Structure formats: C-alpha cells, structure tokens
Length: 266
Image (spheres, rainbow, N blue to C red):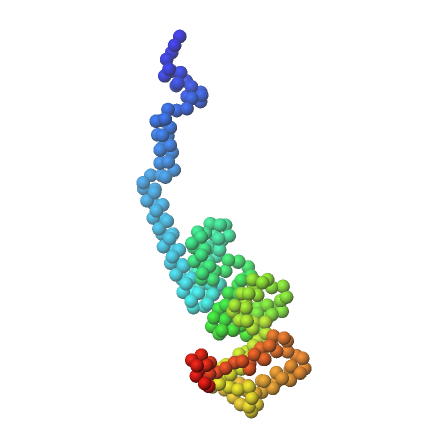
C-alpha cells in the first residue's frame, strides 16, 4: 500500500536516512549563527568591552612611551611609581609568549625597546641599558662600579669585555653603540679626550703638560701620549690600541677639514 511520499520522507528524516529540505537547512544555519553571535544587546556589550580594552591599551602604551623617553629603555622594575607599567609590560610579555599579542602591538612595543625575556639576567636587558647609556654619552666606556637606574651596567660591560663566546649578532649590536667597547674603560675615555683635543686644533707634539680641549682643561695630552709610548715599548698595548694611536695623525681640526672640502688652502 502506497502511504505517500511525504510520509516516507518524514520517516527517513527521523531515521537519519534523508537530509532536510534546502529551506530547512538554511533556517538551521541562520539560527546557529544567531545563537553564536548572541542577541543585539550582548553584541553591543562585547563591542563596548573591546573599545574599552583598546583605549586602555593605548593609555598604557602612552605611559610606556613616556617612560622610554625619560629613561632610554623600557625596563620598568615596578619598585617605584612605574609599578602599573611594570605589571602591564609583564602581561604583554606573557601574551607575546603565548602568541596572543597582536602583530601590530608587538611591532609597536619592539620599536620602544621592549625586553621580551623576563629573565633579570637576560642579555637583551643588559643591551637595553647599554643602549640607553650610549645614547646619552656617545660611548660605552663605563666604570665597573657604575649603575644605571639600579642596573649594574658597568659590571655587565666588564663581563662582555671578558666574554669570548659572544655571538656575531651580539658583537654587532655592541659595535653599533661604540666600536671601542672592547677596550678598558679608562683607556677608551682618554683616547676620546685625545681625539676631541686634536679635532679642536690640538697637536701631537708640544709640551708634555699642555692642556687639552678648552672644555677639558684637566686632560694633559702630552702626558698621556708619553705614557702610551712607554706602554708600547713595554708591549702592554694590544693591536687595536696601537692602530688607534697610529690613526691619531690622520685627525684634522674641524676648521681644517671644512677648508679642505671647500678647496681652501689651510
């Protein structure tokens, strides 16, 4: 007995043998999407929460920008007024480690000098402080006992000078800050004082007790040069130091260099 097509179709759908009709499938999908999105009120609430999150991130990023501008690095320790920033940076570091920090935010923080490694002895942390110091002074001739914002930067630089397993990337990063960073800090500073004296019109010959650059009258170029001659005779200078001393004869005063470039006879 023929019970009819509709009855068979209904029984087949109940048993799972036949799919729903096209219209029924579309309605089910729409209903599912609506369920996932939630009600209009819940969607508005999510948008407000996202807007609030974005504003808060931008607010703290502005705090980070101000901190980096003041200190030259982005290592907020949380021991003073920067506690909120320290907590926020730690959260960004965690998100980055979990691959949950948006790429654009990662890039913006990296441009500020974000230290991604939370290890207090991380090499990149020392480099961040070295960069801050070099930006202020133009060199890395740092006494061993010197600190910067509580970080033992002088001791860190001493460790780098002793290290014989720095990677090429690490050496290149330090070279970019100060090509003379491998030299003993006192010699580094004296050599720089000597080059400043020559650039200001000083000479390699003359009285041993002659004064240095007008803004560095305590420096005695002749005395220092005489001591370097003695150290060279005693073989107490390395190859880099000897090359640097030989290069002193090529340093011309700024006014002489300017005259030569314009065709003037000096």
